[in-house]
Each structure stands twice: as structure tokens, then as C-alpha cells.
Length: 314
Image (tube, rainbow, N blue to C red; front, top):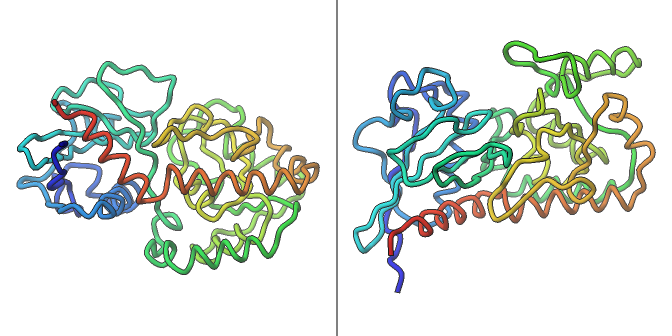
């Protein structure tokens, strides 16, 4: 009989990581790790903080991809222990990390090769740009939003606001997907772009429109808001930053099944206009199914436990 998972050692708050760790930034903690810990709580296993603050992978430079890591230890009733590293960098892990048995990579791209065992873990739920109430969203809030969405079926325009076009750091080549270029094109077409709003208002707007825009910047990462979009169950227009992403339990973003990929800014307007209501419904059902099978907290937690068991030495 397989040993029982007894406890998980994991940082449970910013105080459990070293002072120079990027996770000491509240926005980093709330976006990438708070939801991961929430997923682990669904396992019903004792969670304990590390005895000393967690540090990034040895030798990682501050804000390099390998600095965006932390280790978790999975202890079983037979005394065995598995160490799983977690990486939340935009481009995934980029260097060996010999201290861990395997890596859980949030932005796990199939085009990236890596010598160590690596498994997708998906971006955890982070509500309203990390400022919303995740508990309320996962409770009655999500049920109400889905009901609102069902009551307003149809095609119609895409929803977006100023928050979709926020660009961090230096801009890449002037090509689509490029958030700044897309925003300028819409403005030149006379399209009004609403200001950013509260998480609750944003969710209501997402549930009110047939389509919602998801931009990943330069097309190489998953944007955190897409998890909320899938949870509500909307037809998602997105650049191809999600196309080669791996998710827990074999999940994938597939064109025409749970997302609609676009290559030009003008498609933000043309696709919703030309799409049939049956396509909209297929995409809405597909995105919600992807959330329930691969991105919901209990599914992420179960996948992490599955990986830990796979890495045990029988």
C-alpha cells in the first residue's frame, strides 16, 4: 500500500521567505503564491512553514528567472520526503536546480527544454489584479457570475479596459501581440477604452459581454487574469502567448475549443462581429471546463500531490 502524504513544508506567508526574495513584495506574494497555498489547503494535509526562510535556487541573481523560485517538501508516512521546486518566472526555469527532485512550473512552455523533471502547475487564481477577495469569488460570487453570464447569452462585442494594456518594463519589438500597439490601434479606430475598475465591477462586465480580451504582452507568458476568465466561463480572445502552455492534468488552451487566438489588433472587433452564437457558447463552455479540470484550486492541489507521489522512490 502506498504511503500516505503526511505534511507539506511550504512558505505560508511573506515572512517565510528571505528578505531579499522577490516574494517579499506583497504584489508578488498575492499574485503567485497565495493561490498556490490555497490549492494545497484543499488536500486536507497539514501545512507547516519552513524552519528557516525560503531562498531562491542557489546562485540565482535577484529578479533573474531562477530567483523566482521556492522549495516545498512533501513528507510521507513512511518517512520518505520529496522536494519540489516551484518556479513562477515569466519564461519558466532556465537553469539546473539540483537541490530539488522536480520542478512545478507555473508558466510551463513546451518549447522550453530542461534536464530535470518538470511539471506544469498553472498560474494560481489571483482575483482582480491580486486586490480582490478570492474567498468571495470562489463562493457565491462565482455562481452568481456564471448565472449572469447564462442570462445574457449571445454574440456581441468584446470587453476590455485600460488594465488590459498595462505594459511592464521595456517594450519588445513593434509587433502583435504588443499591448501598446493594440491599444493605439483601437484608439485610432475610435474605440473607447474604459478606465480600470474594481475586481467586482470587472467580473460583472466580463460576465455581461460575450467575449473578453486577454493580452499576454509579448506572447510568451500566461496573464493572471485568464484564470478568472476561465472560471466565469467566457469566450476568450487572446494573442498566442497561451498557445504552447502546459497545464495540470494535460490541460491546454486550444483554438476553437476553449479560446480563440488572434494575430492582429483589428480581430478584437471583427471576430466577435462575425462569430456565431454556437461558437460563443462552445468557447464559454470550453473555458469553464478548462478551469474546472486544470485551474481550479482543488485540481491544482491534487496535481501537485500527484507529482510528489510520482517522484517518490518505491
